[in-house]
Image (tube, rainbow, N blue to C red):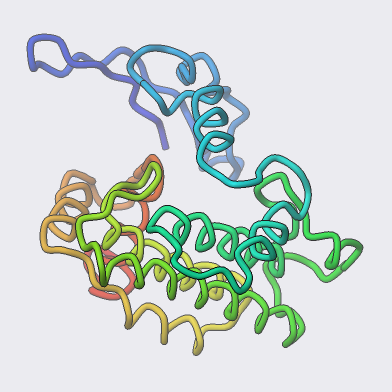
Length: 239
């Protein structure tokens, strides 16, 4: 398999080169680096470059950037009333970050100290309390997003945008996370809850329609990846 490096000039596709990713003779991935082609800090990536993304997160979150910060966010909002839409989103994201700590502690660079030292392997069946902890916090994450959705359906979330899209993405994320730890039955339950708008479904299908059989499709971020997984896993489209 090869990755095609191309660009568009005057709406015409210009193929620059091909980079081999998989060698069928050795039945393994190659060691060819893609780093020269990833321009994190160049203008075309806009606010998606690394430094800018970090600044946005520090500006948005109530507390951020150290281990178990999400626990302090949750504690801060405990028993407070009259929360704004932004408050609910901050609280929702705190539960989202805490939830993944039960599965892959430290995945986003910040650990839950209460789960530190747990040596259960990744991508395998985990203890019931860890699975329950993940589900509990993800359900709270969705609860607060739905409170925003109910009173302000046009609310734009941090980075992702459309609150309806954010809720759908989160359910797909729950599905794929639970599948990764072999909780297929529970995972399927959350895939059933996904509700994407027609335009997102069609966009995902369009991506897949452009792929030849057995192709690799590289997606970028939640808004591209999660609808793709949904149309394949739930709708069995180009699976």
